[in-house]
Structures are given as C-alpha cells and as structure tokens.
Amino acid sequence: MTAPTPRFTASTQKRLRRLNLAASLPPVVFAAVVLVYTDARTWWHVAVLAPGAVAALVAFERWTAGDLDRFALPCAVVAAPVWPLGVLVTGSPNAYWGICAVGSLALRQVRRRRALVMAGLFSFVAVVGAMRLLVQRDDPGDVVVRYVLVPTVLTVVVTVLTVVGERFYDLIRELEQTREREAELAVVRERVRFASDLHDIQGHTLHVVKLKIALAQRLLDRDTARVAKELRETYALVSDTIAQTKELAYAQRRLNLTAEIENAKNLFEAAGIRVRVTREAEVDTRVSELLGQVLRETTTNILRHAQAARVQITLAQTGITIVNDGVTATGLPELRGLAALRQRVVDDGGELSVEQRDGRFRTAAVFAPARADAAPTVAREDGR
Image (tube, rainbow, N blue to C red):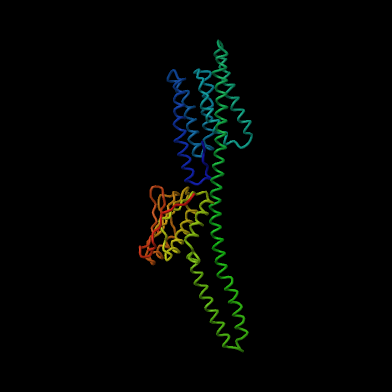
C-alpha cells in the first residue's frame, strides 16, 4: 500500500488515494466488523469495542489522504483505552486491533526514536494483554496465548508490513520526482536549442553589421560609392536576419518533420512517457514543416502541463494527430502557442483542433487533400 503526500502532483495523489481505498479499505472494514462481532456478547460490549475499530478506520482513511499528522494522536487516544477495557472488562482478545492499526500507521509520522516508539507499542500490547491474568487465573496458558502472544505477534507483523509499504511508497515518490525532473530537463534542453539557433542567426550578423558600419564611417569622406555599397549589403543582411528570426520564433527554421518526430520521442522517453508513432502515409513536404511545428509545440505542452503516461502520434496523408492521457483539469488549459498556430494553419488551408475527452487530450492538424497529395504508402508503426 502507498500513501501520497502534498509533494506529489494533485492528479497523482488522487490516483493513489483511489487505488488505496479501492484495494484496502473494504478488507479493513470487513475485518473491523468481524472482530467486533466475534468479541461482543452484549450491546455494551459493542459500545466498548466500536471506538477502537472506528479510530482504526479513520486513521487508515486519513493515511491514504496523506493527512494523518492531524489525526494520529486523537485516534491513538481513542483506540488505546479499548485494549485494556477489552482485557479487563469485556474479555475481548481482539480488542487490541484498534491500537495495533493506529499505532502501526502513526509510526510513519515519527521522525525521531522510531525504534523506541515501536518497542513501546509492542510492550503496551503485551503488558496489557498479560493483565488478563488478574481476572482469569484458572488457565494461564490460554491467557498468555490469546491475550499476549497472538496480539503481540500480529502487531509486530502489521507494523513490519506497514514499514515495507512505506519503503515502497518512498520508491514511488522518488520515481515520480525523477520523472518530473526529466520533464523539466527536456524543456530546458528545448530552450537551450532555441537559444543556440538564435545565437547562430543574430550573433554572426550583428558582428558583420558592426564591422560594415565601422568601415562605412571610415570611407564616408573618401569613397561614397563604396559606402553606399556597404550600407546596401548591411540593409540586406539585417532584413535577412529579421526574416530568419521570425522563422525561428515560429519554429520553422530548418524544421524537418522526421527530425521533430525523433526529437519528440527522445524527449518523451527521457520524461518516462511511453510513445508510439504510427505512419499511415508520407506527408506532403509542403505541409511537413508546419506539422513539425504543431508537433513541437504539442510536445512542449505535454511536458510542461500534462501528467501523461502514454502518447500516440499518428501521421496521415493529410495531417498529424497527437493524443496523450495526461489530462489534469476539467476544462481545456490555456495553450497560447497552439492558439497562435491555429491561424497560420488556417492560412495554409488546414485546420488545427484541440479537444479533451474521456481522460485524453487530442491535438490534430489536418490539411485539405490538395495540400497533401503524396501517394499513400504501406502503413507502418514504430514506438516504444
């Protein structure tokens, strides 16, 4: 069993909570009812034993919600007296169950001297069980087995299983944090690549412009024809740089759809997301750059905003579809990059749609057949 904490994302916390409640709460409730029914012989026995069972159920439910800190002490205060009352008053050998469950769960909240607290829990169960000898002296062996050995051993077993579950939870937490760090690193790599392209475009250009202006200043009074030539070249160079920068801003510069697909697969796999690419046909080269831009923007959005485990990329003769299962909100998130792309896709004769349905987020860019008239090929699939 695993228990989420506030450090997890909200969606992960909800999934783990639902898993724990669905898998573990019914058996815990059943055990509580059976134990109370077995030990209670009159109505007031139920009144004595029920608070321990209720405290155990509350502690378990709060544990799955990651909110046991505020409830551990109150639940322990309620469950602890039930065991002595069961031993001395009602003769209930199973009355230890409440403090056993609450104590084993509450050990997670203990940060110091956990071994000492654990030993105290075992000693409490054993010593209180031995107090049965004060009211039942005719069969000491039966008392030791039913009230001391069995409760103490089961408390030890439950505590060990809880500690193992805690270690399993820590492993899941580390894996989740690693996945988040990989996603952040993928976004950083994408930014570094953009910065590198921007430097390639503007760094050399600005340096050349600086030299040409300095040369024009020196020739201003001696060779006006040469100055005019240098200024014309400078103007053309700046115009070309502006065009390249604009293309880079829209992710079009040297953009290749095949390379973008491979890059998207690498980014998703680095973030721990399973990706599958299905190629139904070869895409017309006239629309491949814009489809690559849609794929790049969608990849960035998934890494930044979604909690996806699987991504499906489908290439058709007329476009591309990207589907992921990382829906984290009830409504469509604000995706400014795709919103800006939609008009450019429309201007090129296509349609860009974004929809969220049945826990999946679908982005599709489709062009008219005239824009993607390449001959269809045999469908093939690749992915991991």
